[in-house]
Image (tube, rainbow, N blue to C red):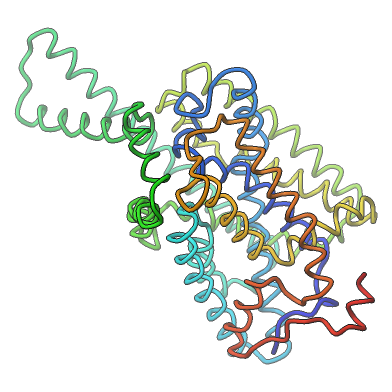
Length: 439
């Protein structure tokens, strides 16, 4: 067994992976450069009027959740592609060994990436979630999609429980305040419940809507020395890396991975379906997704980003993001199927072919721009200015990726990952004759 050759790659799947990777950055850049809550509530940081508010709405409607959804689906599709190819060459046992080694190395890459570059890392979560996919690899497309839909329902149910819990805490705290103003005494049990509700709401307030002093204290950490920055990441990661494997937080990823496996089996990601199929997929996806996303963005703005409203809106999270992700997929698959806009799809495919290297490069650039590693611009830019950094990262990826792949078989991080997975140093340089062929 060995890594997939250039001739064996599926160009449309690579292009979709590249598109999703570029699309993730407009959401991730906010985590690099300002308080986490500013992504969902523009009043926290970065500006909430004019062009800043317009950028929040645009990213909220078209990007947030959708590109991560798409990237998760592509990751699921890649699991089937890897295992089916390995089984044909060496059998199920060798394929399982390869699959789990590959994902356990990715898990270690994710941990290193999270602490050294970006605490919002997704590699750790993907590698962990991928560990359950192998036994399902041979299921039919319909069954895989149904499993994904079951995870969506579980996620919606859990989000409903969380939203009602928040509503109950808020109502309990309000009732306690009203009782105090009226001079009524609470029982010991009531007082304990009220105090717990207040503590929870205050903790959420600090996390979701910090004061100017708290924001400045946070900013000093991210603009500090490398050790201070790594310490800040460690504190941010402490709760996330302690989440158990069965936690509902992972339903988000599992649902889309299984749906992606099913769609790949159905030929959707390899541009094998008809133009009619992709046209209807795009029309229905955008017709269902854009109005729903627009309404929920308006609702959050109209309710002044009230926490209860936001949590109840999250019940429809998959219903709002999946249609837009599928519609975007349909448009890109149509271009690939028709051989149109080759100047764009070929560059997206190159980015997708070395997605891990480009993902790490994005983190290197953003860490240098925003933290004490470099310019220390954390908290200093308005929201719209953050997207100058995004544009720069996009330009680097679109220009550099095709040039790199003319000379080398893999991206640098992919080369390391594959060499570790196969426990054998992989050839990196493309022979001169083949290099000239790809020019």
